Image 1 (spheres, rainbow, N blue to C red):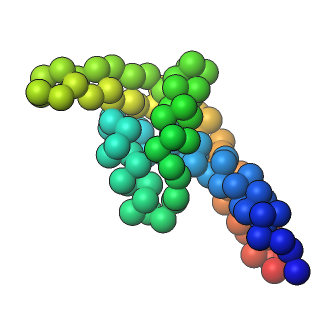
Image 2: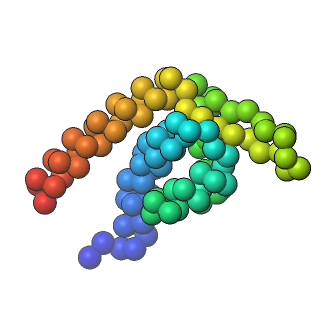
Length: 108
């Protein structure tokens, strides 16, 4: 039997790329971090806020997301959206995800 910590480590690795793809897809429509977190949670993609925000900053630094502050309300919010490069990567990842899903389903 696989130890719980070992299993947890493998699940974390598997989910890491999933969260990147999910963010790029969701953020085709601009959204702020907390709303993105709620959307992911509703889709049963579990990610902690302290993991999500650094990921958003990293994707932005890689040119895959753009951000801008909305100060029109009493509480300023930083909105993110996928760039054309991010959309291209999302499509590449989505196609490969579908291929891997078919392969794993066939093997299983």
